[in-house]
Amino acid sequence: MKQAVSCDIFCNVIDNYGDIGVSWRLARQLANEFGITVRLWVDDMASFAKLCPDADASLESQRCRGVEVRLWGKDFTDVTPAKLVIDAFGCTLPESYRAAMAVQESVWINLEYLSAEDWVEGCHKLPSPRPPLTRYFFFPGFTKKTGGLLLERDLLARRDAFLNDPLQQKGFWESVGMEIPSGDTLKISLFAYENDALEGLLDAWVNGKQAVLCLVPEGRILPQVVKYFSDETGRTYARGNLELRVLPFVEQERYDELLWACDVNFVRGEDSCVRAQWAGKPFVWQIYPQHDEVHWQKLQAFLDFYDTTLSPEAAHAMQGWWRVWNGGDGDVGQAWDAFAAARGELDVRAKVWGWELSQNTLALNLLDFIQEIGRIRALKIEG
Image (cartoon, rainbow, N blue to C red; front, side, top):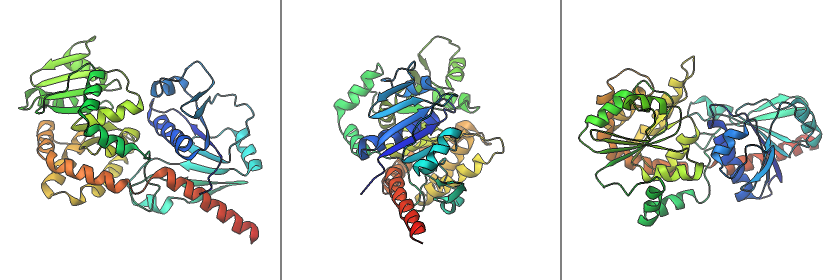
């Protein structure tokens, strides 16, 4: 398959790590799996450096893991555009760069946000004329009529190797300063935005019958955790049947291991949500809230896809807890208990779901679409 030889990816860093997390994954995959020369343009190098410890936040240009990473400043200097240009999530390209794209005849892709809503299939790959250029919409998604999800070639094999290797698991737990938890301990990762349901959830774990180990990567929910335990300096907390540990910011590769090592994963936004689905474990998604509350439609659209093979009881438990966790009505403790009781069935569903999604991957679909655009252009010229 003949591929584009160069690619520029532009990303505005929003909400610290969500958009840049997706862009960085895509940049590395295009460079390292497909041999494409990739430049990743970011407007916040400090946030990027948190995701990639190899990076130096003080530099405006550097090479990291096969990708040239450039600071996208306000005064954008003259740059020759790549043959493939991706603006991630609708960011606005520099005017001088767009003019040069027309000369280069660059293919322009707008990589959109992930959604399971019905309309996505109809908008995927649609052209948007921006004379003298054409911008094409590319939507990630959960069906064959969408762009699929980002998945590295070896990710599922690495996951299975980890889950079947006690030494790898031991190494992970040692890296967070712990011994391997006992088999009857419920291991949970908690990555979330601020959440009104958190206090009730922590109460349920503290007062529950099962021992719970909760690992919390540094993030926006941390001040609420600290307030709950009335301790401004601690990193490890214990109360009742709950032990909670705060982890330093976890880089992307290590975050996958965290998801694999836990029994239930709380995730937020887009990037961590997708990684939780590859982990093949029950998960809880906190969708990014929107002022017009359309996020409820997006959340329900995903649940309608996901719970089709669940029993009515398990589907009700999953939907009930997800809605409570996302700010809906309901008793926090009761909703969590119902979700936890359905965990056996949810675990089976998570494994099957991950395999189903792995048959439709974003990077391959994107490169196939680039070739399709080339054929369309050739037909227009010949015509």
